[in-house]
Image (tube, rainbow, N blue to C red):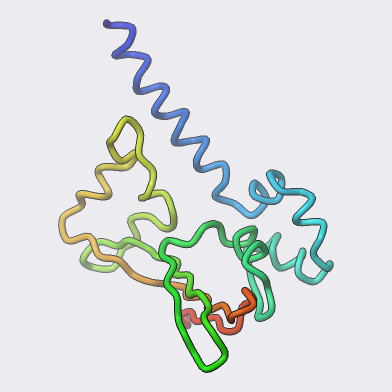
Length: 146
């Protein structure tokens, strides 16, 4: 039982580090080399930098930015598309706590980062919104100007 108590935190830490491994464009590219190679050189350069542009498809955006925090649909005269939101979580005074998909992962039914999820006054801040048209390509990128 004592060994299990010692082993459990190590396993949890290893799981957390493995999740962080997909947190960079380089890690996502390494995991999907054929997909990355299918894009033109200009798009590859942007993906490596973690940037996107109008015209990118959903897979290219996922390679560059990772999975979105929220997905919504929108309907226009041209059809139905998706809106991907990327979120930062902040303290009440605006200091970033964490960004991205980290807050969505759980181990043994508990959040991996429970001290952030329960932070008093934690607020959500959408820092990037990517709007896809009905064909699944980026039509609009909305982000704050620093």
